[in-house]
Image 1 (cartoon, helix red, strand yellow):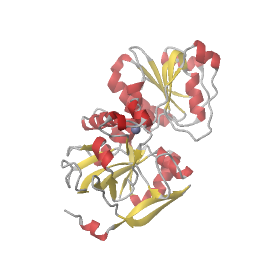
Image 2 (cartoon, helix red, strand yellow):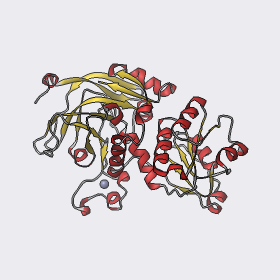
Image 3 (cartoon, helix red, strand yellow):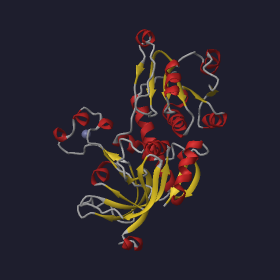
Image 4 (cartoon, helix red, strand yellow):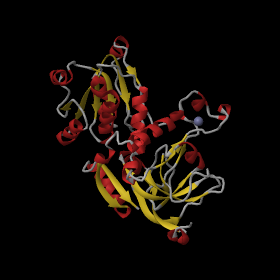
Length: 359
Ligand SMILES: [Zn+2]
């Protein structure tokens, strides 16, 4: 079945041309290759990464000029002749924005994938174009990172599977034990997801402290499950940290802001034998000053987390479908795609947690 709109063969889509230069343009509806699918985007989510990509005009995951947007959910509308038969037009789906090597022969995969570091795949295939009425799903993504959505799962919630997958990735790889004190630096959407996922996975066996510079976000952190919340705009005061955490330094500290300053604050909060998790991406050249005495004598572990793997995306989709993580609470604005410039500003002004765009 070919949708009526597809007959025009063009669509109005967001195209990133360079730094601070995104335009809504009439472009061809993507062609599908033999193993690809075409989907109608029902809801797309805009995040801080999109804002960073927009400001920098470049990112490992996008080439310019190119289609923009990477978090979405929608409905399959067309399929290549060699695509898996289970993906038929009309099926509600959510897809990740990338796929690592999928070769059935492990020897044919890249070195990173052979070493089980799929997030570091040397041939990671990124997919962009969610800020558009239609998006192509490359065959490789359809193979490992595409899921059917039950009717009761709203598209706008499913669109948040990608950021949730990144958080799931971190929680999977960071060792946490009963009784651990965990600090989440930053109470934006990612920090809030960390709180919800950690609480869901570890119950009351861990103590969670949220730190941020904005009281309204700290109140949200509490409502997402943080045991305590601390405004550190005036600096880290040991007595206040001790009062909130029971100890002066934590076992695990997650940086969920994406600034050099927040990384520094996070490092200062790591206790003996503890783990620093640099999660937020910063611009090239940003540096962290490490006290090597502490690094050695405290055996501080540093476990940076980038992106997600197919296993993490699967976990995220299942958590959303089973309603384990309240991703819908992050959605604070809904706009038509034509309001993309406004949506980008709202991310910067922090007047929204997550904005959903409707093409
Ligand atoms: Zn690979």
